[in-house]
Image (cartoon, rainbow, N blue to C red; front, side):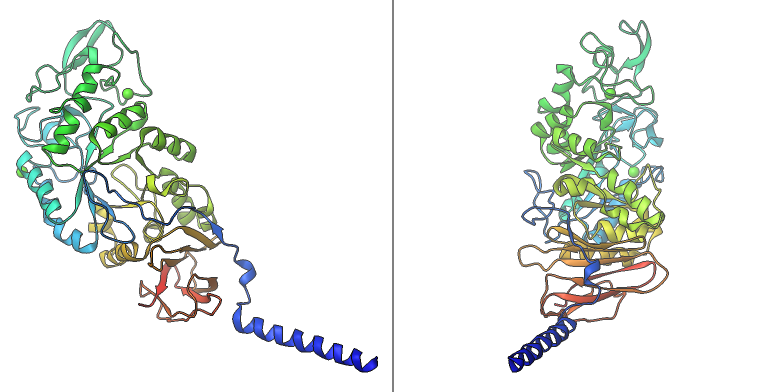
Length: 472
Ligand SMILES: [Ca+2]
Ligand SMILES: [Ca+2]
Protein backbone atom coordinates (compact mmCIF):
# COMPACT_ATOMS: atom_id res chain seq x y z
CA UNK A 1 0.00 0.00 0.00
CA UNK A 2 2.81 2.37 0.88
CA UNK A 3 4.60 1.53 -2.37
CA UNK A 4 1.51 2.25 -4.35
CA UNK A 5 1.12 5.57 -2.54
CA UNK A 6 4.72 6.52 -3.36
CA UNK A 7 4.23 5.53 -6.95
CA UNK A 8 1.08 7.66 -7.12
CA UNK A 9 2.86 10.68 -5.67
CA UNK A 10 5.72 10.21 -8.09
CA UNK A 11 3.42 10.00 -11.08
CA UNK A 12 1.49 13.07 -9.95
CA UNK A 13 4.68 15.12 -9.55
CA UNK A 14 5.95 13.81 -12.89
CA UNK A 15 2.84 14.92 -14.74
CA UNK A 16 2.69 18.27 -12.95
CA UNK A 17 6.34 18.94 -13.76
CA UNK A 18 6.01 18.02 -17.39
CA UNK A 19 2.76 19.90 -17.91
CA UNK A 20 4.54 23.01 -16.55
CA UNK A 21 7.42 22.53 -18.95
CA UNK A 22 5.05 22.02 -21.83
CA UNK A 23 3.12 25.16 -20.90
CA UNK A 24 6.29 27.25 -20.91
CA UNK A 25 7.33 25.85 -24.24
CA UNK A 26 4.11 26.53 -26.12
CA UNK A 27 2.14 29.28 -24.43
CA UNK A 28 3.05 32.87 -23.62
CA UNK A 29 2.91 34.07 -20.05
CA UNK A 30 0.49 36.93 -20.68
CA UNK A 31 -2.04 34.97 -22.71
CA UNK A 32 -4.72 35.61 -20.09
CA UNK A 33 -4.66 39.29 -21.06
CA UNK A 34 -5.80 38.38 -24.56
CA UNK A 35 -9.57 38.06 -24.85
CA UNK A 36 -10.30 38.11 -28.60
CA UNK A 37 -13.40 40.03 -29.64
CA UNK A 38 -14.89 38.85 -32.91
CA UNK A 39 -16.04 42.13 -34.48
CA UNK A 40 -17.54 41.11 -37.82
CA UNK A 41 -19.30 37.92 -38.92
CA UNK A 42 -19.47 37.22 -42.64
CA UNK A 43 -18.00 35.00 -45.32
CA UNK A 44 -14.83 37.09 -45.33
CA UNK A 45 -15.28 38.65 -48.73
CA UNK A 46 -13.92 42.09 -49.38
CA UNK A 47 -15.69 45.42 -49.81
CA UNK A 48 -16.27 46.02 -53.48
CA UNK A 49 -17.55 48.93 -55.50
CA UNK A 50 -18.29 46.41 -58.24
CA UNK A 51 -21.67 46.92 -59.86
CA UNK A 52 -23.18 47.02 -63.28
CA UNK A 53 -21.19 50.15 -64.13
CA UNK A 54 -17.79 49.01 -63.01
CA UNK A 55 -15.72 45.94 -62.36
CA UNK A 56 -14.89 44.56 -58.93
CA UNK A 57 -11.59 45.35 -57.27
CA UNK A 58 -8.49 43.72 -58.71
CA UNK A 59 -6.97 43.57 -55.21
CA UNK A 60 -7.70 40.85 -52.64
CA UNK A 61 -8.15 43.54 -49.97
CA UNK A 62 -10.39 45.72 -52.18
CA UNK A 63 -9.57 49.17 -53.40
CA UNK A 64 -8.86 52.57 -51.90
CA UNK A 65 -10.63 55.82 -52.80
CA UNK A 66 -8.97 59.24 -52.90
CA UNK A 67 -10.94 62.42 -52.34
CA UNK A 68 -9.42 64.34 -55.23
CA UNK A 69 -10.01 67.87 -53.92
CA UNK A 70 -10.07 70.04 -50.83
CA UNK A 71 -11.89 73.24 -49.93
CA UNK A 72 -10.74 76.11 -52.14
CA UNK A 73 -8.47 74.21 -54.50
CA UNK A 74 -6.74 76.70 -56.85
CA UNK A 75 -9.27 78.49 -59.06
CA UNK A 76 -8.64 79.37 -62.69
CA UNK A 77 -9.98 76.24 -64.35
CA UNK A 78 -6.92 74.04 -63.93
CA UNK A 79 -7.99 71.54 -61.27
CA UNK A 80 -9.23 68.82 -63.66
CA UNK A 81 -5.83 69.00 -65.39
CA UNK A 82 -4.03 68.77 -62.03
CA UNK A 83 -6.00 65.66 -61.06
CA UNK A 84 -5.51 64.06 -64.48
CA UNK A 85 -1.75 64.43 -64.10
CA UNK A 86 -1.89 62.54 -60.80
CA UNK A 87 -3.75 59.54 -62.22
CA UNK A 88 -0.73 57.42 -63.30
CA UNK A 89 0.99 57.74 -59.92
CA UNK A 90 -2.25 57.07 -58.06
CA UNK A 91 -2.85 53.93 -60.09
CA UNK A 92 0.73 52.88 -59.37
CA UNK A 93 0.06 53.38 -55.64
CA UNK A 94 -3.01 51.13 -55.71
CA UNK A 95 -5.75 53.76 -55.64
CA UNK A 96 -8.82 52.42 -57.38
CA UNK A 97 -11.30 55.29 -57.38
CA UNK A 98 -11.44 59.09 -57.19
CA UNK A 99 -14.15 61.34 -55.80
CA UNK A 100 -14.47 64.65 -57.62
CA UNK A 101 -16.18 67.84 -56.39
CA UNK A 102 -19.59 68.83 -57.87
CA UNK A 103 -18.72 69.24 -61.52
CA UNK A 104 -21.37 71.67 -62.77
CA UNK A 105 -21.78 75.43 -62.65
CA UNK A 106 -22.68 76.95 -59.29
CA UNK A 107 -23.95 80.39 -58.46
CA UNK A 108 -20.44 81.55 -57.64
CA UNK A 109 -19.28 80.66 -61.16
CA UNK A 110 -15.53 80.37 -61.57
CA UNK A 111 -15.05 80.59 -57.78
CA UNK A 112 -17.67 78.03 -56.75
CA UNK A 113 -16.67 74.76 -55.12
CA UNK A 114 -19.80 73.36 -56.72
CA UNK A 115 -22.09 73.04 -53.71
CA UNK A 116 -24.36 75.86 -54.95
CA UNK A 117 -25.61 74.18 -58.14
CA UNK A 118 -27.41 76.30 -60.71
CA UNK A 119 -27.35 74.22 -63.91
CA UNK A 120 -26.81 70.46 -63.66
CA UNK A 121 -25.79 70.33 -67.34
CA UNK A 122 -23.21 73.13 -67.38
CA UNK A 123 -19.89 71.31 -66.94
CA UNK A 124 -17.94 74.41 -67.85
CA UNK A 125 -19.29 74.62 -71.38
CA UNK A 126 -21.77 77.53 -71.12
CA UNK A 127 -21.12 81.20 -70.44
CA UNK A 128 -23.15 81.47 -67.26
CA UNK A 129 -22.72 82.94 -63.77
CA UNK A 130 -19.79 85.01 -65.00
CA UNK A 131 -17.66 82.36 -66.70
CA UNK A 132 -17.57 79.49 -69.15
CA UNK A 133 -15.28 77.15 -67.21
CA UNK A 134 -16.12 76.09 -63.67
CA UNK A 135 -13.57 76.64 -60.93
CA UNK A 136 -12.13 73.25 -61.93
CA UNK A 137 -12.05 73.63 -65.70
CA UNK A 138 -13.95 72.97 -68.90
CA UNK A 139 -16.20 70.09 -69.84
CA UNK A 140 -13.54 68.92 -72.29
CA UNK A 141 -10.94 68.89 -69.51
CA UNK A 142 -13.31 66.93 -67.27
CA UNK A 143 -13.98 64.36 -69.99
CA UNK A 144 -10.23 64.01 -70.52
CA UNK A 145 -9.77 63.43 -66.78
CA UNK A 146 -12.49 60.76 -66.66
CA UNK A 147 -11.14 59.05 -69.79
CA UNK A 148 -7.62 59.08 -68.36
CA UNK A 149 -8.83 57.56 -65.08
CA UNK A 150 -10.68 54.80 -66.91
CA UNK A 151 -7.64 54.06 -69.05
CA UNK A 152 -5.77 53.41 -65.79
CA UNK A 153 -8.57 51.28 -64.35
CA UNK A 154 -9.66 53.95 -61.88
CA UNK A 155 -13.36 54.63 -61.24
CA UNK A 156 -14.65 58.20 -61.00
CA UNK A 157 -17.34 59.22 -58.52
CA UNK A 158 -19.36 62.42 -58.95
CA UNK A 159 -20.41 64.62 -56.05
CA UNK A 160 -24.17 65.02 -56.38
CA UNK A 161 -25.95 67.92 -54.66
CA UNK A 162 -29.67 67.15 -54.59
CA UNK A 163 -30.83 69.03 -51.51
CA UNK A 164 -30.65 72.60 -52.74
CA UNK A 165 -30.02 74.84 -55.71
CA UNK A 166 -28.62 78.35 -56.01
CA UNK A 167 -28.32 81.03 -58.64
CA UNK A 168 -31.92 81.31 -59.82
CA UNK A 169 -33.69 84.56 -60.62
CA UNK A 170 -36.10 86.26 -58.22
CA UNK A 171 -39.80 85.60 -58.72
CA UNK A 172 -42.98 86.22 -56.75
CA UNK A 173 -43.66 82.98 -54.86
CA UNK A 174 -47.35 82.15 -54.30
CA UNK A 175 -46.52 79.69 -51.52
CA UNK A 176 -44.33 81.94 -49.42
CA UNK A 177 -46.13 85.11 -50.57
CA UNK A 178 -42.79 86.78 -51.02
CA UNK A 179 -40.06 86.99 -53.63
CA UNK A 180 -37.75 83.96 -53.74
CA UNK A 181 -34.72 83.05 -55.91
CA UNK A 182 -36.51 80.05 -57.37
CA UNK A 183 -36.75 80.95 -61.07
CA UNK A 184 -34.31 78.68 -62.92
CA UNK A 185 -36.05 79.11 -66.31
CA UNK A 186 -33.11 81.00 -67.80
CA UNK A 187 -30.39 78.38 -67.26
CA UNK A 188 -28.04 78.12 -70.22
CA UNK A 189 -28.35 74.39 -70.89
CA UNK A 190 -32.13 74.73 -71.08
CA UNK A 191 -32.40 71.35 -69.32
CA UNK A 192 -34.14 70.79 -65.97
CA UNK A 193 -35.58 74.29 -65.72
CA UNK A 194 -37.10 74.85 -62.27
CA UNK A 195 -39.53 77.23 -60.62
CA UNK A 196 -41.19 77.81 -57.26
CA UNK A 197 -43.29 74.68 -57.91
CA UNK A 198 -40.15 72.54 -57.61
CA UNK A 199 -38.98 73.88 -54.25
CA UNK A 200 -40.35 73.84 -50.71
CA UNK A 201 -43.00 74.88 -49.89
CA UNK A 202 -45.16 74.22 -52.95
CA UNK A 203 -48.63 73.00 -53.94
CA UNK A 204 -47.70 69.38 -53.07
CA UNK A 205 -45.28 69.44 -50.17
CA UNK A 206 -44.41 71.92 -47.47
CA UNK A 207 -40.94 70.73 -46.49
CA UNK A 208 -38.65 67.72 -46.20
CA UNK A 209 -36.16 66.65 -43.53
CA UNK A 210 -33.85 69.63 -43.92
CA UNK A 211 -32.78 72.73 -45.80
CA UNK A 212 -29.35 74.26 -46.14
CA UNK A 213 -28.17 77.82 -45.71
CA UNK A 214 -31.42 79.38 -46.95
CA UNK A 215 -30.89 77.98 -50.45
CA UNK A 216 -34.00 76.99 -52.45
CA UNK A 217 -34.78 73.48 -51.18
CA UNK A 218 -35.48 71.04 -54.01
CA UNK A 219 -38.72 69.02 -53.70
CA UNK A 220 -38.11 65.40 -54.77
CA UNK A 221 -41.79 64.55 -54.34
CA UNK A 222 -42.50 66.37 -57.59
CA UNK A 223 -42.83 64.01 -60.55
CA UNK A 224 -41.17 66.65 -62.73
CA UNK A 225 -38.10 66.69 -60.45
CA UNK A 226 -37.95 62.89 -60.31
CA UNK A 227 -38.17 62.72 -64.09
CA UNK A 228 -35.25 65.07 -64.53
CA UNK A 229 -33.12 63.47 -61.79
CA UNK A 230 -33.47 59.76 -62.60
CA UNK A 231 -36.31 58.80 -64.95
CA UNK A 232 -35.55 60.56 -68.22
CA UNK A 233 -32.92 59.06 -70.49
CA UNK A 234 -31.58 62.61 -70.96
CA UNK A 235 -31.98 63.46 -67.25
CA UNK A 236 -29.23 64.23 -64.77
CA UNK A 237 -28.43 60.69 -63.53
CA UNK A 238 -28.38 58.97 -66.90
CA UNK A 239 -26.48 61.84 -68.52
CA UNK A 240 -23.81 61.65 -65.83
CA UNK A 241 -23.66 57.87 -66.24
CA UNK A 242 -23.94 57.44 -70.02
CA UNK A 243 -22.46 60.63 -71.45
CA UNK A 244 -20.01 61.78 -68.79
CA UNK A 245 -19.16 58.16 -67.84
CA UNK A 246 -19.18 58.61 -64.07
CA UNK A 247 -19.06 55.28 -62.20
CA UNK A 248 -20.70 56.28 -58.95
CA UNK A 249 -22.04 58.95 -56.67
CA UNK A 250 -21.21 60.74 -53.46
CA UNK A 251 -24.45 62.32 -52.29
CA UNK A 252 -24.07 65.62 -50.51
CA UNK A 253 -25.99 66.55 -47.35
CA UNK A 254 -28.40 63.62 -47.38
CA UNK A 255 -29.77 64.72 -44.01
CA UNK A 256 -31.67 67.33 -46.02
CA UNK A 257 -34.05 64.85 -47.67
CA UNK A 258 -35.44 61.38 -47.13
CA UNK A 259 -33.36 58.28 -47.94
CA UNK A 260 -35.84 57.05 -50.58
CA UNK A 261 -34.47 59.75 -52.90
CA UNK A 262 -31.04 58.10 -53.04
CA UNK A 263 -32.68 54.67 -53.18
CA UNK A 264 -34.67 55.75 -56.26
CA UNK A 265 -31.59 57.26 -57.90
CA UNK A 266 -29.63 54.06 -57.27
CA UNK A 267 -32.37 51.80 -58.58
CA UNK A 268 -32.67 53.83 -61.80
CA UNK A 269 -29.03 54.75 -62.36
CA UNK A 270 -26.94 52.13 -60.52
CA UNK A 271 -23.28 52.55 -59.69
CA UNK A 272 -21.35 52.91 -56.47
CA UNK A 273 -23.11 55.12 -53.95
CA UNK A 274 -22.08 56.79 -50.70
CA UNK A 275 -24.01 59.35 -48.68
CA UNK A 276 -22.75 62.18 -46.51
CA UNK A 277 -24.93 61.64 -43.44
CA UNK A 278 -22.99 63.79 -41.00
CA UNK A 279 -23.81 62.09 -37.71
CA UNK A 280 -21.84 60.00 -35.23
CA UNK A 281 -24.86 57.87 -34.28
CA UNK A 282 -24.28 54.35 -35.62
CA UNK A 283 -27.97 53.44 -35.47
CA UNK A 284 -28.81 56.42 -37.65
CA UNK A 285 -26.02 55.70 -40.12
CA UNK A 286 -27.10 52.08 -40.44
CA UNK A 287 -30.75 53.10 -40.82
CA UNK A 288 -29.86 55.57 -43.57
CA UNK A 289 -27.59 53.12 -45.45
CA UNK A 290 -30.25 50.41 -45.42
CA UNK A 291 -33.07 52.79 -46.32
CA UNK A 292 -31.11 54.40 -49.15
CA UNK A 293 -29.54 51.15 -50.38
CA UNK A 294 -26.22 52.97 -50.27
CA UNK A 295 -22.90 53.09 -48.50
CA UNK A 296 -22.49 55.84 -45.96
CA UNK A 297 -19.45 57.72 -44.66
CA UNK A 298 -18.50 56.27 -41.29
CA UNK A 299 -18.69 59.41 -39.15
CA UNK A 300 -18.98 57.16 -36.08
CA UNK A 301 -15.53 55.73 -36.84
CA UNK A 302 -14.22 59.23 -37.60
CA UNK A 303 -15.18 60.71 -34.23
CA UNK A 304 -14.17 57.55 -32.37
CA UNK A 305 -10.70 57.67 -33.94
CA UNK A 306 -10.36 61.30 -32.84
CA UNK A 307 -11.28 60.39 -29.25
CA UNK A 308 -9.08 57.29 -29.27
CA UNK A 309 -5.91 58.54 -30.95
CA UNK A 310 -5.92 62.17 -29.83
CA UNK A 311 -7.29 61.41 -26.35
CA UNK A 312 -4.90 58.49 -25.83
CA UNK A 313 -7.66 55.98 -25.15
CA UNK A 314 -7.30 53.31 -27.81
CA UNK A 315 -9.74 51.02 -26.01
CA UNK A 316 -12.45 53.29 -27.49
CA UNK A 317 -11.69 51.51 -30.78
CA UNK A 318 -13.68 48.61 -29.33
CA UNK A 319 -16.82 50.78 -29.52
CA UNK A 320 -19.50 50.57 -32.18
CA UNK A 321 -18.87 51.93 -35.69
CA UNK A 322 -20.64 51.68 -39.02
CA UNK A 323 -18.02 49.36 -40.55
CA UNK A 324 -18.62 46.91 -37.69
CA UNK A 325 -22.37 46.96 -38.35
CA UNK A 326 -21.98 46.51 -42.08
CA UNK A 327 -18.48 46.59 -43.60
CA UNK A 328 -19.97 46.49 -47.09
CA UNK A 329 -21.81 49.79 -46.62
CA UNK A 330 -19.17 51.77 -44.70
CA UNK A 331 -16.79 54.29 -46.27
CA UNK A 332 -14.09 55.18 -43.76
CA UNK A 333 -12.03 58.39 -43.78
CA UNK A 334 -9.57 60.39 -41.66
CA UNK A 335 -10.32 63.90 -42.92
CA UNK A 336 -12.18 65.60 -45.76
CA UNK A 337 -12.82 68.99 -47.33
CA UNK A 338 -15.14 69.97 -44.44
CA UNK A 339 -13.54 68.57 -41.30
CA UNK A 340 -10.01 67.88 -40.15
CA UNK A 341 -9.95 67.23 -36.40
CA UNK A 342 -7.78 64.10 -36.15
CA UNK A 343 -4.27 65.09 -35.11
CA UNK A 344 -2.71 61.62 -34.90
CA UNK A 345 -3.23 60.94 -38.59
CA UNK A 346 -0.76 58.17 -39.35
CA UNK A 347 -2.25 55.95 -36.64
CA UNK A 348 -5.71 56.75 -38.03
CA UNK A 349 -4.67 55.83 -41.57
CA UNK A 350 -2.97 52.68 -40.28
CA UNK A 351 -6.32 51.89 -38.66
CA UNK A 352 -8.68 52.47 -41.62
CA UNK A 353 -6.29 50.90 -44.14
CA UNK A 354 -6.05 47.67 -42.14
CA UNK A 355 -9.70 47.47 -41.09
CA UNK A 356 -12.92 46.78 -42.97
CA UNK A 357 -15.01 49.23 -44.98
CA UNK A 358 -13.91 51.24 -48.01
CA UNK A 359 -11.06 53.57 -46.97
CA UNK A 360 -10.84 57.08 -48.41
CA UNK A 361 -7.64 59.09 -48.49
CA UNK A 362 -7.86 62.87 -48.40
CA UNK A 363 -5.96 64.65 -51.19
CA UNK A 364 -3.96 66.98 -48.93
CA UNK A 365 -3.03 64.18 -46.53
CA UNK A 366 -1.66 62.16 -49.42
CA UNK A 367 -0.18 64.82 -51.68
CA UNK A 368 0.92 67.50 -49.20
CA UNK A 369 0.81 66.75 -45.49
CA UNK A 370 1.85 63.17 -44.75
CA UNK A 371 4.78 60.94 -45.73
CA UNK A 372 3.77 59.59 -49.14
CA UNK A 373 6.03 56.55 -48.83
CA UNK A 374 4.32 55.56 -45.61
CA UNK A 375 0.91 56.14 -47.16
CA UNK A 376 1.81 54.06 -50.20
CA UNK A 377 3.03 51.28 -47.91
CA UNK A 378 -0.30 51.32 -46.04
CA UNK A 379 -2.26 51.30 -49.32
CA UNK A 380 -0.21 48.31 -50.49
CA UNK A 381 -0.86 46.48 -47.22
CA UNK A 382 -4.57 47.29 -47.50
CA UNK A 383 -4.84 46.04 -51.04
CA UNK A 384 -2.83 42.85 -50.61
CA UNK A 385 -3.19 41.81 -46.95
CA UNK A 386 -6.31 43.38 -45.39
CA UNK A 387 -8.67 40.46 -45.97
CA UNK A 388 -11.34 38.66 -44.02
CA UNK A 389 -13.30 39.35 -40.86
CA UNK A 390 -11.89 41.33 -37.95
CA UNK A 391 -10.93 40.19 -34.45
CA UNK A 392 -9.73 42.67 -31.83
CA UNK A 393 -6.99 40.98 -29.81
CA UNK A 394 -6.01 43.65 -27.30
CA UNK A 395 -6.75 47.29 -26.48
CA UNK A 396 -5.86 49.63 -23.64
CA UNK A 397 -5.15 53.36 -23.42
CA UNK A 398 -2.07 53.44 -25.66
CA UNK A 399 -2.04 50.03 -27.34
CA UNK A 400 -4.34 48.31 -29.86
CA UNK A 401 -3.93 45.01 -31.69
CA UNK A 402 -6.39 43.57 -34.22
CA UNK A 403 -6.38 40.67 -36.63
CA UNK A 404 -7.82 40.37 -40.13
CA UNK A 405 -8.57 36.71 -40.46
CA UNK A 406 -7.80 36.27 -44.15
CA UNK A 407 -9.95 35.12 -47.01
CA UNK A 408 -9.77 32.69 -49.87
CA UNK A 409 -6.15 31.72 -49.29
CA UNK A 410 -5.01 35.24 -48.43
CA UNK A 411 -3.36 35.16 -44.96
CA UNK A 412 -4.80 38.42 -43.59
CA UNK A 413 -2.76 40.48 -41.12
CA UNK A 414 -2.23 41.61 -37.54
CA UNK A 415 -1.96 45.36 -36.91
CA UNK A 416 -0.27 46.70 -33.77
CA UNK A 417 -0.89 50.40 -32.99
CA UNK A 418 1.31 51.96 -30.32
CA UNK A 419 0.47 55.43 -29.02
CA UNK A 420 2.95 55.27 -26.11
CA UNK A 421 6.43 56.75 -25.91
CA UNK A 422 8.11 53.35 -25.65
CA UNK A 423 8.62 50.24 -27.71
CA UNK A 424 5.92 47.73 -26.80
CA UNK A 425 5.72 43.98 -27.33
CA UNK A 426 3.02 41.42 -26.73
CA UNK A 427 2.19 37.76 -27.31
CA UNK A 428 -0.81 37.37 -29.59
CA UNK A 429 -2.74 34.44 -31.08
CA UNK A 430 -2.50 34.24 -34.88
CA UNK A 431 -4.19 32.07 -37.49
CA UNK A 432 -0.73 31.02 -38.64
CA UNK A 433 0.98 27.92 -37.22
CA UNK A 434 4.76 27.33 -37.11
CA UNK A 435 5.03 30.04 -39.75
CA UNK A 436 7.55 32.83 -40.13
CA UNK A 437 5.95 36.27 -40.19
CA UNK A 438 7.28 39.79 -40.72
CA UNK A 439 6.27 43.41 -40.31
CA UNK A 440 5.30 44.72 -43.73
CA UNK A 441 5.78 48.36 -42.68
CA UNK A 442 9.49 47.81 -42.01
CA UNK A 443 9.13 49.50 -38.62
CA UNK A 444 10.25 46.29 -36.87
CA UNK A 445 13.09 44.07 -38.08
CA UNK A 446 11.81 40.97 -36.29
CA UNK A 447 11.10 37.83 -38.29
CA UNK A 448 9.44 35.69 -35.61
CA UNK A 449 8.04 32.22 -36.19
CA UNK A 450 4.64 31.45 -34.72
CA UNK A 451 4.39 28.55 -32.31
CA UNK A 452 2.57 25.34 -33.21
CA UNK A 453 -0.49 26.75 -31.41
CA UNK A 454 -0.30 30.03 -33.37
CA UNK A 455 1.07 32.28 -30.63
CA UNK A 456 3.82 34.74 -31.42
CA UNK A 457 5.41 37.78 -29.83
CA UNK A 458 5.23 41.00 -31.88
CA UNK A 459 6.44 44.54 -31.21
CA UNK A 460 5.69 48.12 -32.23
CA UNK A 461 7.82 51.27 -31.97
CA UNK A 462 6.73 54.36 -29.97
CA UNK A 463 4.00 56.54 -31.56
CA UNK A 464 3.92 54.20 -34.53
CA UNK A 465 2.63 50.86 -35.78
CA UNK A 466 3.58 47.50 -37.21
CA UNK A 467 1.54 45.26 -39.53
CA UNK A 468 2.36 41.56 -39.57
CA UNK A 469 1.60 38.82 -42.00
CA UNK A 470 3.10 35.63 -43.38
CA UNK A 471 6.60 36.18 -44.79
CA UNK A 472 5.95 35.16 -48.36
CA1 LIG B 1 -9.19 74.93 -68.02
CA1 LIG C 1 -34.24 69.45 -48.24
